[in-house]
Length: 58
Image (cartoon, rainbow, N blue to C red; front, side, top):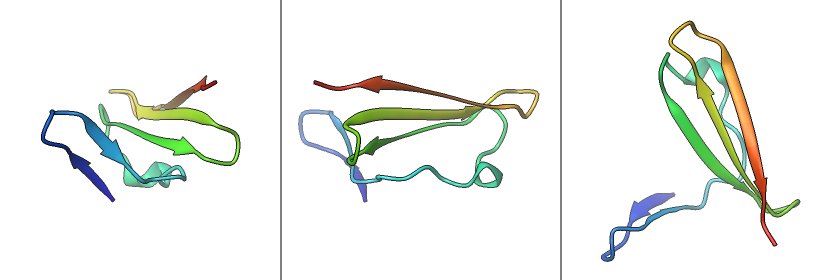
C-alpha cells in the first residue's frame, strides 16, 4: 500500500482516513482523496486531539 521508491519518494495508495483510534499521540498520516482530488493529512497532537487538513490538487 505504501513504499519509498528508488529515488527516495514516498508513495501511497491509501485513499481513506484511518480511524482516529488507530493514531497514537504525535503521529501523522496522509492519503489521497481520489474522488475529490485532494491530498489529506490527519494527525494526533501530544494532547490526543485529532487535527486534519487538506490541499486541493489541480
